[in-house]
Image 1: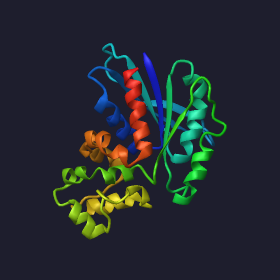
Image 2: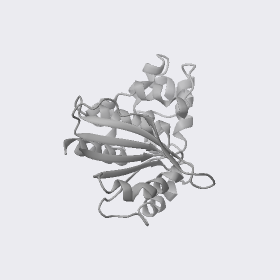
Image 3: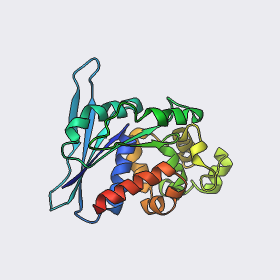
Image 4: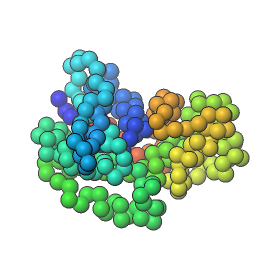
Amino acid sequence: MNKMAIFVEGYTELVFVDKLIREVAEKNAVLIQWRRIEGGTTCDRHNFQIQAEGPHAGQGHFVVIHDCGGDVAVKTRMVEEYLLLARSYSEIVCIRDVYPKFTHAEIPELEKGLPLFVPTKPIIVEFILSIMEVEAWFLAEYTHFPNIDAKITVPAIIAACGFDPINDDMQLRTTPADDMNSCYAIGGKTYEKRNAQATVDAIDCAHVYAGLVEKFPYLKRLCDIIAAFLKA
């Protein structure tokens, strides 16, 4: 069985990546397991399952998605697991936001620092940045807004929030999660990371794969990694 491990900073990224994988996987082609890693500094470290992978039906691919509990922890948790994973996994991916630890101007510094002191044999770890937050991808997937509430249209967003999610570069938004909440407020709704499943359910992954990847190089890289893994 071909195996991939993905490390994300929180629940929002976990459910989104899960959907990205299932969107392109053929039926019964992949098993996905969710895990959470906690502790390790002032208390014992625990790596425990939070969702089983479902029934085994001859799937050729297995993905484990680790919720690391914060952007800073993503690389640390991966390094802690690397030697164990390298025995039987073919892909390791780390996904983290830029905000709030880094500014736009500091992105090159972050990109340069992420691979430092990370093993490269037998697996080269892929680092994916969501600039500035994963919600920038959600903002650009503007077709999901009416699925949250019919009042949340692009013209309404432009009038109320002062940006155009279709034509403006959402990577330039400083706090995309706050922007998401402002958009949802148009329809009397709120956006919270802990309730991200409703947003992810509304997102059109076909639009992500067919259009958004051209706007977000790191998102394209992530989608390419997933597609290549599932074809292997």
